[in-house]
Length: 438
Image 1 (tube, rainbow, N blue to C red):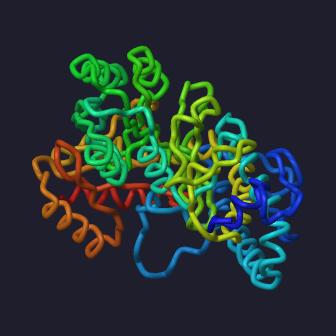
Image 2: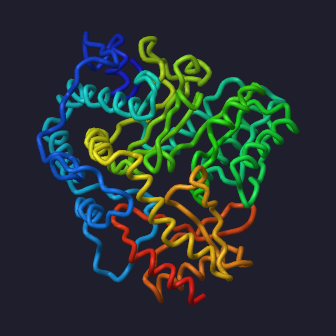
Image 3: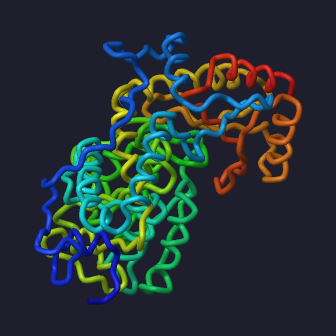
């Protein structure tokens, strides 16, 4: 048989499959986690803390790596979420297990963990496990679904916006050469409102009836803008347009309901807000749309589990995927609504006062439907990357505040601030104090 991933061969169970004679449906054979501490940030019987319960969130923060004594306040948790200590320990145990047992484990037993992870992700995003395939990150998922989208022909168009992720935009632009389509990019309105975002896509689709595929970033990595996904997806469907939803930053900062929101294609990260080790993502394709995504580079998909053939990652980090199950347990002990409320509370502690400062422009709306914990700002009139790079350096060198520059928005560059589980109100107060000096 031709070279394939160990896991896909095992799951497909075809001739020469790794699990000889034991093709495993999604609901079969569960393999439990390696014994270790209960992956929860809460004491037994304790309720999740309220958004402003500082004692309760200090206890949660203690479950994460200790803050380094470097004089730096990390306000850039949007890059990736540090693993809780219990998940780090589980990851280390799984790494030892995989290394000790080698191919005997990978070829016989790992598939149970993989199926469990699919089931757990599916339950959280309100999908079926057969609609989920594990990837290394949301970028890989985006490239697979955009590059494999089979319903484009020359003369069709693809729509994207200035808020979409760079890799998604590049993949869409690649379709110009691959499929002979036109790529249309729009700038989302600023300041954004719930209705003018919907209107912007509606007007773009009305102006470009050749659009057949559209990118939609659920929560933008540039400025933290959360889109009204359900309304936009429904509007696009009425025009016969398919939508790829990038939920890499949205999932975990808030809930995702792919079936309820009418989503056909979506991508996720587990190392952003779920707390899994780096290198675990997921792709969702609604079951009756799997055939509209071509098998990856001629992959021969299994009839029993066809979504597996839409991505080909090669040898995966098995221990990271195993630990991701524990990370989901840890996250759900708090609950996504609780996490989202805390992150928005921390966000409001700095963003609302900053909006009152004469020289500061807060880009992200305060409408709770359109924001989460991640929010961007700049000095009014300072829109160049150089100016914002200089501002980031000033905040770090003088105030010990670590932020990140974001470019790509039509309105210009900005600084992104993203609190995390270890962030405190004092950190937010330090940012406000620094901004008042500008």
